[in-house]
Length: 353
Ligand code: NAP
Image 1 (cartoon, rainbow, N blue to C red):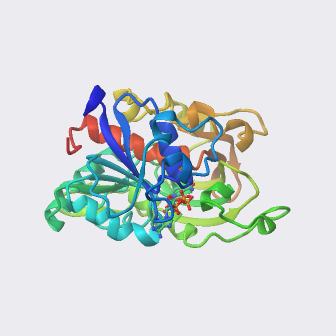
Image 2: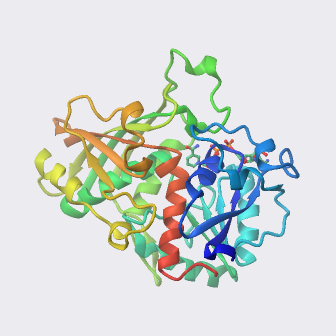
């Protein structure tokens, strides 16, 4: 473990989410990128030769010189971050967990399984305990823990303090999702310029089922008990590079005015803030009061892309209260979320180190 930091591997390291992992882990106080893994197309090359780097700042030097390994490599890092496409994640992530790695996955493949935690450290940190049942059920030395879909995470971060304070009954959400959420090259440019695509396969279902799992309970005897509020989602792809915007209307079990909702957002702090985890934003929810914010091009990088930005909190004649939430989809919506999960596992002494 040279320099004292924990060596980590990144799966799908050349992709959109993989590049974010490499960027966000550069200079991390606890973790050091030691192994990079991608498809056969990239294996055997140096990372800088295999990767079409598409992020603003330059590729971190330490990563540039690392060799890209194939999926059959015998990885040495105890912690593995996964940005794999769903169709290949199942076998690879399970194999690594069985061998004793902590696999922190962005992929949807394992999120809804009855012994796999789906985590947002501010929302349901107690769900980490599900890894004990997972190891027992599957006979694994390691485990898989997942972070939510890139739209669900920002919706649920905003809903958490409202559910605690007023009880959620019904949620209606319409998303305007960035193109980077579809990976690279993603949606063809001719489908995206001058257009809105009112369909993202599987996304609307994930908004509902993931929100209910995240805001539900867990106990070792009964497993996960999903929350019972109803969610109706419309998911749209829009010509924005990064940052998902979501227009949300909510009906509560108990009365709440827009001012009550704003106060709940502003007072909200979770375990990452309490523990001062390295990737935690000071406030998980930032409230904007201007009539025309948040906007993706101005606000997505606030709090280093790790917060959800809320605005336009007002009365909704249909359900009670409505607001807009914006969040970075490849930072808090993907790589940053998995890194924050790993930080929580570390302080809970649950990393296999
Ligand atoms: P991406 O840009 O398409 O990258 C995919 C990565 O997986 C690349 O490193 C690629 O390696 C590798 N790969 C592709 N096909 C493979 C195969 N058949 N076998 C092994 N490796 C293969 O995708 P992404 O946007 O980073 O998304 C990765 C995962 O994160 C997906 O499951 C996605 O749903 C999830 N996710 C994405 C976002 C987002 O905002 N983009 C947010 C949350 C979750 P090569 O370069 O070598 O081909």
